[in-house]
Each structure stands twice: as C-alpha cells, then as structure tokens.
Length: 429
Image 1 (cartoon, rainbow, N blue to C red):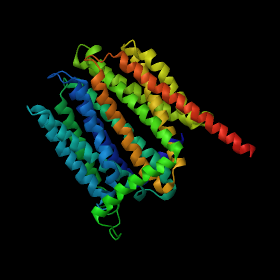
Image 2: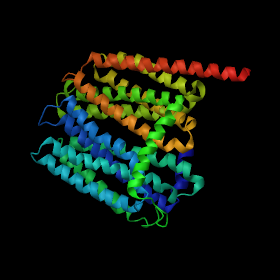
Image 3: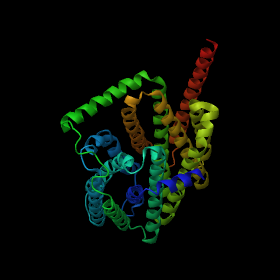
Image 4: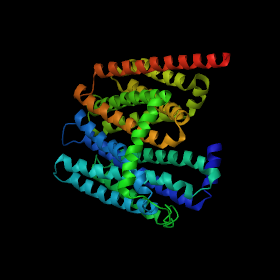
C-alpha cells in the first residue's frame, strides 16, 4: 500500500521517528485526559449530570484552541521548540496530577475546571510546535507526505488513548483520578522522549531578527482582521466556512444529546453507559475514516459544493429517521452517518479554502476557521443545555438539527448550480 510504503521511508529518518514518538505519546495522553474529563462530568456517581455541565466541559476542552491558537505561533517562533515539548509536557503532567488530586478532594467545581483548562491550553502550543518542527526532521521532497501521515498518526493515537481510558474506567470501577494519572504518565514519557532530540535541531534559528513581543501580538491581531476582510472578498470560501460552521453546530448538539442518552436513557449503570459511549465514539470515528476514503472520489464526481450538499442532505434525511426512536442501535448508525457527513464536509471545505484564498492570507483564514469550528461546537452544547431534558430525549433538538442540515444542503445545491452555469458561460465565450 502507498501509505505503508511512505511511512517506511519516513521512518528511516531518525529524528522524524523521535519527533513522531513525542507526538504519539502526547496525543495519546490528550485522548486519555479528554475522555477522563468527559466521563467525570457525564458519569460521575457523586452528582446528577446536566447538559450545562457537559457544555462547560466542552468549553474547557475546545475554547483554548480557539482563543490561544492564532497567537501561539508568535511565541513558538521565539522559544526553542524542543524545550516547548519538554517543559510543556512536564507542566501538563504536573497539572494532570493536580487534577487527579482535586477529583479525590471536596473542592468547588471551578477549581477542577481551572486545572483542566490549563492542561488543554498548553496543548495548543505543543501541537503547533510539532507541526512547525516537522520541516527540520525530513527533507523537502517528503514534507507533504510527512504533513499528511504525522497528524493522522496523532489522531489515531488520541483515539487509542480515549479507548484506553474507557477500558481503564471499566477495570477500575470508574476511577477518574486513576485514568487522569495514566494521562500524566504519558505526558511525562512524551517529555522524556523529547530529550532524545538535539536542543537546537527543531528551531527556531537563534540568529533571526525578532520584533518585540508586543508588536508581534498586535500585528497578529491586525492580521486576523485583515483575514476577515479578505474572506469577505472570497465568497466561495466564506460560503464553505458558513456551511461547515452550521454542520459542526449540529454535530455538537447531537453529541450532547447522545451523552445524556448514554448516561440516563440507555443504561442502568455507569459501566453500561461507558460501554455505549465507547461504541458511539467508535461509530463516529469509523464515519470519519470512511469520509477520508471516499471524499476525493465524491468531490471528483460531484464537485466540492455537490459533495457538501449530498452530505448535508443525507444527514437531514437520516438523522431524524435514526434519531427519533431514541434507541441505541439506530443512534449508533446515526453516529456513523454524522461522522461521515461532518468529516466529508470538512475535507471539501479545507480544499475550497486552500484553492480560493490567496496564499498570503491562508494561514490567517485557517486560524479563523479553527475558531469557527470549535466555537460552533461549544455554542451548540450551550444551547442544547437549554433545550434538552434530563434524559436527553428531545424531539425538538432532532427536528431543528434536521432543518439546519436541510438548509445547508439546499444552499450548497444552489451554489453548485450557479458554479456550473458560470463554467458553461465561460466555455461559450
């Protein structure tokens, strides 16, 4: 297989192997930590889980990516990147231990969330640093392949870490503290692995001139505003981003609903609920991978807007058909469909933004994209907290989400029709 062959070639680079090991250990720890946080909020036997608590947990997990992300690069271009991996993962290991101690103590909820927020905030620097360091460990000819395989391997590691956390939850009778300590161990191993890389190898170059930090941060903020103006001039990219924002919102609302169903409607015990949650996450992940496999073919046949329209239209039809019974088996099928739809739309949106936005603005637009993607998910969780009953069974949420999917589908079909008409007109000229 080409992927296996490419990976074998990359693994011949010793420092690439070491950097990849740092990524795999770090992101597997992320998976463990995030699942531990989610299961503590959703399946804690000490209290009654509410959609509001779930929304708070999602804000802790996702908002640091959006708020810190655009500015992380300014600091990463000043700090030795290997030291970012070393001290960042050591800091996260220490903070994870503090979080575990908070779980074992009677402390206010805000203290627990503050600790978790610090752990996820540091993650933005580590992930950005891993991407920035990649050109230092492979040659230029193999950089595109490395950019494809390395993040994918990290996502698989995070998924595996989440599965490991769920398994450990079942084996330890739901001990969230023990699971978080496992994440701390993995963070520590990632920090120690970073020491195998030479300190100066990963950059940045010390002899480069750096503007003052305040000026750099101000320039970044102005750059984001300029990116918004540029996006307003690129209607196709703006429409694609609007579509993926709505679809991400829908996915977030349904995620909260499934969490509540697993907790109260479908299970009589914590272990049963965790098992169902694991199956739902697995079904959604399978949809993501199927989308990655079929989207290039589908876009080739239907075009980017056509494929986005089909994805949203399929969700509009299948989501209420599978979701309204509020039964586990149809809902697991719905999780697969929604994973496929969300990732398929995202891949098409990524391509649209990459091809229709000027290269000099591309980084800023993707930073804005990241903000929209995560804020939409958190906003959906917050609004779901107002609409969902205690057991998660809400016809209103299912119907509203289906309508939103349908509106996106209609808008994308119209845009595809207009694009085809413009192409035919150009051919006639």
